[in-house]
Image 1 (tube, rainbow, N blue to C red):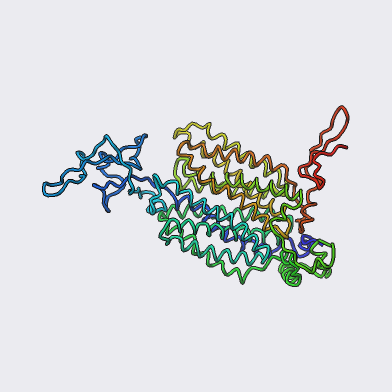
Image 2 (image 1 turned 135 degrees about the vertical axis):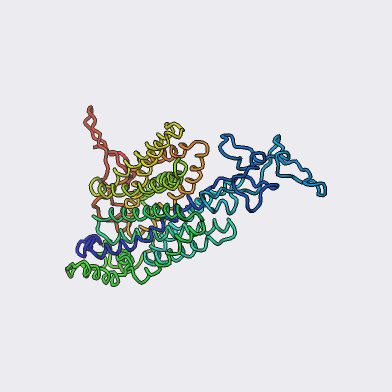
Length: 570
């Protein structure tokens, strides 16, 4: 008996599961805030050189003396951010030695000098990471390192916490990740050096990814197959609501330290999950903890007011696991590793395909969001709108996934988003057309967000229970390597505002096409063992071509068979 069959008796999505799923997803709000806080925490304010002979602690970004001490940039709309005119030394009065003076006569407009101190415009942000550590001009390349460090942390956390969750349980991984995330994200505003800040961003990324993917897997494993897509979209909606909340908080809190502190301290509340949430019974059964799993399933049945036949919860262990090879197999726990994802041909092909889709989609999703402040108009409004468009994208997925499946919607969302991105260079780069760029960005984000929600559900359904967290972890790790490069692609907007969106669009198109070769999982039982995963979708997605001359039929298989034959002639 498969675990999905047990859930049909105890309730696929009763009151107990609804309560647990909604409770598990609350921390995802803060995951959304932390993932995109870079947009505001690392915002680059307008800046100019600190003029040694004129500036002091009370001067501001705009001063009259800039007219003769600081050159204008080529667009003549602001002062040069990285250079000043050379200043001729002359006596302030006859009793003092020569030194540069702050007047029109002391400036030498024939030469400019670089600077190592700056004045920042505090009209939008009172303080950011950039203004605190002067990450401008020659040091501007250090700014994207913050988001890249966070994404690198996600890569590490995907594997580390995936292994912890598969080896020691989903609940232990969730609580450990929350404890680490709450501590490091609360401490980071008080670090004295940017290098320490970057190191902590890695840990924060790892810990937030740890509890995000673990609560997602827990929710998918405890509900019936007809509600898995709904759960996958709900966690994504929580994530996007977190982004929207971040946008409003950033509008009212312009100091990066206060903003970071306000989105971190509440995480300590979720340490109570250690006493509130149960372990995943599906994981327990896969690890031969049958008595504990039975207790939780009985509790679910009572809460859902279900009467379960005696033989369902008292079946033989090997029948519940679904292996059925031998009684001995049920009496030992087999620990699996990442290498198991590549041992058999079909699972190997599927793993590589999913990883590729994760990578391409992550670049598009994060890239569009990071580029939103550069699209023109109010940067806070842009961020909120670009984040809010994710909610209808996920609602679209809820309405479509249980009717059209996973594969086709994933492909279409990526392709539509890709087309929108590649069209942005065609929009004239003038202020009166900025709204067209916004609309194309929203379409691109809609497609990327919907695809992100689908790929999470799709990945969880394709990998077997015994290595599901590891599979999602590996996919997320390699996928978020795309998140590492996304902020650097976003910086290309300094040359052309449409260029980053065009690059994200190409990535989306490529991912959409490759998604067609994955097997459909709609209304299918989740694979429990590696054998189940290898057999899953064996006859799925065949392209039938009838030859008119020889009347032969050719089947082009989406994935390799055990004999590695890719074309069969009948």
